[in-house]
Image 1 (spheres, rainbow, N blue to C red):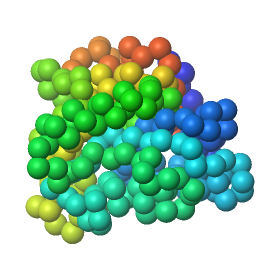
Image 2: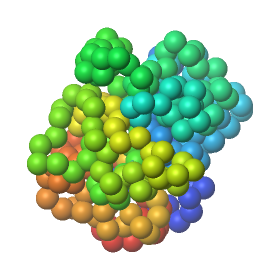
Image 3: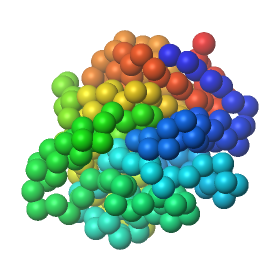
Image 4: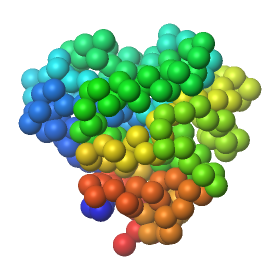
Length: 242
Ligand code: PGA
């Protein structure tokens, strides 16, 4: 595991984006695993900047997002599909057909999950998977449980997660109760994992995830088992890390 600490959010965002940009420069057909939430927004801005400066083209890239809410249509303003268009896809030369996000309105959710994993398999392994960290240690929407599903599946969101994500909705009640998420096994199959954590409110959980016991009660702790994990933290989030 490689932990990189940054004394400003801007530097962290630049460094994270440079890792993704160089992955695509080396392999223009790279498969990128993408994340949503507050953490990656600044990183996507940097990627758009790299694209506008002619440093990188996404025209041959394939992407898979970690998760999507169940019950929201792709054009709902809080769907992750909408988020990805707003924050990245609409601003670069990515081909829409090669962007993959679970479909939260599928009639057969289990079948949608199975097919999502099949699509990832068919694309080859994810070259780099971007990850944020939930306050309860979740990655994607893999919430703390006695047992974790390895493959893409439907989850009931923890109350804590709904509260945390309510900031993006008008009313807490509007936050969907379920989501489709890549499983921990799906995530761990990526060739490289990039965990990004920002803010003092995550200092305790990132310490537990990276230096505590590997346990399904802290899904991010399973990342410790990955041979190629890079962690980018700002000073506040990294204050309790070695
Ligand atoms: P955040 O969420 O980036 O909005 O803090 C991270 C997560 O819950 O995985």
